[in-house]
Image 1 (spheres, one colour):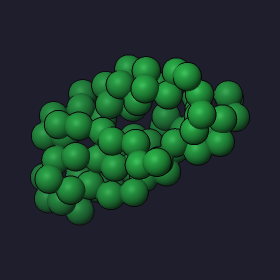
Image 2 (tube, rainbow, N blue to C red; image 1 turned 180 degrees about the vertical axis):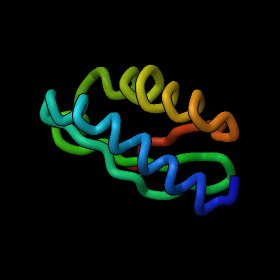
Image 3 (tube, helix red, strand yellow; image 1 turned 90 degrees about the vertical axis):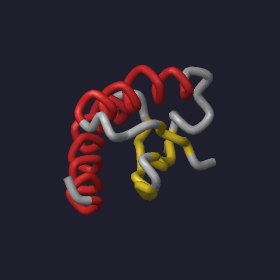
Length: 78
């Protein structure tokens, strides 16, 4: 899979996760994919939520790495 294909797949997956975050007043923004790391930014109520780390690890990172095993990490850009 090319870098462009991976980036497109990441955006597609985040678009599927987004409604779950929107239900709680939050959102996620894709920043970039580089060196097998996905950079995102949590928005809205997700920014300051005490469960933000769990959301990233248990929802976003889990889903992305399941769909795209090449991904090694997901980092929230603050």
